[in-house]
Image 1 (spheres, helix red, strand yellow):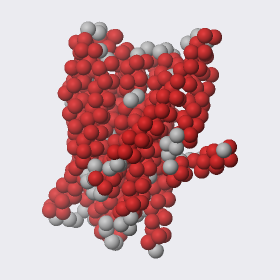
Image 2 (cartoon, rainbow, N blue to C red; image 1 turned 60 degrees about the vertical axis):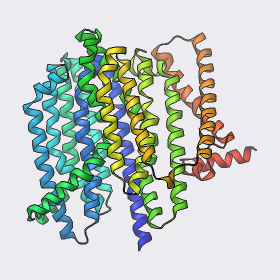
Image 3 (tube, helix red, strand yellow; image 1 turned 45 degrees about the horizontal axis):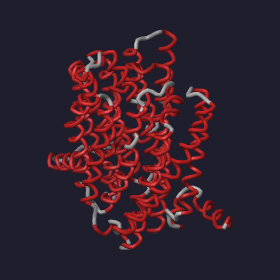
Image 4 (cartoon, rainbow, N blue to C red; image 1 turned 180 degrees about the vertical axis):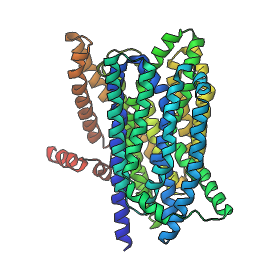
Length: 525
């Protein structure tokens, strides 16, 4: 019976991981055609307010459902489950109404803090999302707590499909009818709200059931206890899930004002911020690789701990750290090598390629942070995650404007890397000794990884040099060049990883197609 439950849990985790991966890819990719249609200033307008939506979406999609599912799973009978969901829903509804009213009433004030009063309509548009948050989080949390992952998966993917379709549709209409960038941004934000409404429609069965079984009759002490849990455990999970979005939110409040003090005109500052924001979809795409592995890590670690298999626990955590860090570093190195061409292919020009290259260094940092976070959560250490997130946010808030005033927009990228580096350092110091790698093993792995990355970079740069002798840097040529170099880079990295024994056989088998790669390598010897 226990094996059946474990199998059900693992299958459910896989379904959610795949759905989350699809949702993240959709969420990253749509920004590329959107930027191409609305231009850098239009992209700036959208990205200035996006972090507010991103926080609400993350709370409703990842953070709060995980927290609610834990509360539901701890209850023995259906009556108790519905009672805890009712209490959480009531409290989240109050919170959502407060946030909604604050964003509606203070939209102009928040826009002025961002350095652009014309953003007020966008802030008002995105505020409607928060009214839907309690409905989405409660339904997802209930289903995940009863090990029914498919409804959550369907809601995630359907929400992103509708949202992306509406945002791109708004951008196309804008280009046809000549709308100004602020009107386009406001309507694009409403597309996000409609996506959430569609996700809510997938839970109609649950809400019919909820209306019949809901039980709000509880003492004030019970509500206070649930309230404490939401802010103690639930908010920690939410804060980590939205870490990159929070860092983007700091950019929204500081970059425009700091660029003006740096000497840029208002028009130039908007244009520059729009180019800087190109780094966000690239980082999001890079993160999906390693974070998709870390999302499947927690159930495996928890199972190993429950069975007191410390050796298995250590091997799983070490293996996922190796895979996550190696893939994210390789992906980042490849993006940096190809940044001028990648920037030109996706966005039409190679402006601020150095700034974006520094920004994409976030990928390995946030990937390793995610893996360490899973390790800490498996041993019940949520305070470490909270401390790391707070460290990153405080660092970003304190240094961002100062660095931009000194160095221009590149200072924002540098500050993001410093902030994530500080968070990673906190997690490393807090990490249990039982899962820390031995210094010798870690040094050997790092040396092998460096050799693999250097050889991959040398190969790409050499071929890039040959290509530039015959072809100019334009979008048409980049359309052939970038995919070719991605394939070459992947082949070089995999070949070097095999020759240097970067991964163990067990680690190779964890990767999609890893077993076939090992077999072919053995046959070629």
